[in-house]
Length: 523
Ligand code: GLC
Image 1 (cartoon, protein in one colour):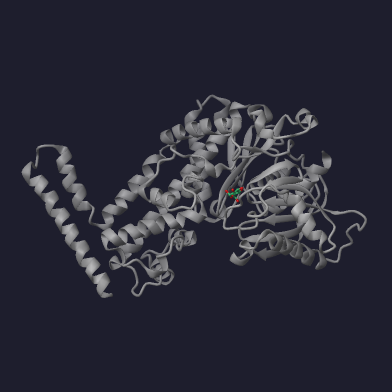
Image 2 (cartoon, rainbow, N blue to C red; image 1 turned 45 degrees about the vertical axis):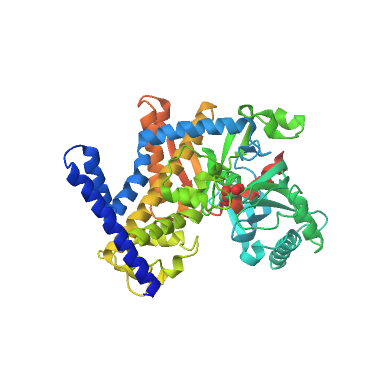
């Protein structure tokens, strides 16, 4: 311990002692005079233990998560959805895809998937869901890591890098693509985009640390990719561009007609929903041919779900710090409380307070955690996964991950585990709220999906590391969602009988991009 650490510790103890004495004084003046004063004594004294902070965390994170409160949050969010459906330029963005796949589309396509940390190029064969054991299959896939260097590339270099990766993938396959016409490709894009047709869209701020939008905002994404490929004598035509949430919806709708929503919950969150065009303001559609409106009764809509929930989803003091110190405060309230990028940061902020006020880790912030966003959400998942009776696995994992000199005590890892459980519990509850509100919105506008046997069912296609891999997350979220539906619908109503499932998908972005090209060919 450095001399500075020692002095900090002494000061902290002195401050706690003073606080304790002043609270005792309150109680000795009028010990029974009012419950309120008595409570003050209790709270102030409790403030000093790790256990009391643990209780407070449990209370703050769990209190908003009872079904009745969640239902009233869902109603409030549905009002936000409806307002943004009228005129927002940032969310509730209608795509050009107005039909869901029939599952009979067939063909072989090249799919591109640009995510936050990987670029994937795949050759996908669609054979139709009727009587096929594998209706869709990835015949080949190459994965290219997008590291910090790639993320920071300016547009010219970034699209060149993409074109090089596409070329390398195609050349690694001995296939005879028709040489007299451009190779049709579909693109799943995990960033916002202002769609101008099935196959085009204006670049917008990408977020997630990328730089290639900086000199291309407003330019056409499809053209940028095609031009970079042309420089390498690669004749490709980007025939479909879809957001990753829409790709998820399309890939599962190809297999199951009851799919009417796609949900992403990984580093970021988003959802795509199938909605009637009539529930949107005209300005939302930009310039489109009259013929599009004539054939489009419904449309796949990119909600940009992460932006909802402000002033509706209760926050704790740690959420407030995270938001205040964020580059874009208030920009994506739901995302800041639910996704892989932020869950670990919430735990880090709690640890920071516990180190400062409760002597966690002897009052020293682990060096490995001093930088914002240095606590990986995976560490939380590992804490929750520990089934050893003495928390032995967590003790050694935390010692290594936080680079501690001495192993943490059982009390300390128990504190960390409870905090992790509370943060992830609330995240699943808030996701259930946001999804329930989308489901209720669909009911309001008569979107009533059915299975191929005609039974009412809403299948929500899911993708992303948190929803698919975080221990217990998907099941809990689904369970809360069902409880909300049951609580709100009289037992006799048809809604109470409708089944609602969070359907895990595999390689949804890659398959969805291929389905999007196949669908575009039928229009
Ligand atoms: C971010 C993007 C959104 C994307 C989501 C999931 O929220 O804004 O477009 O769908 O991450 O990748």
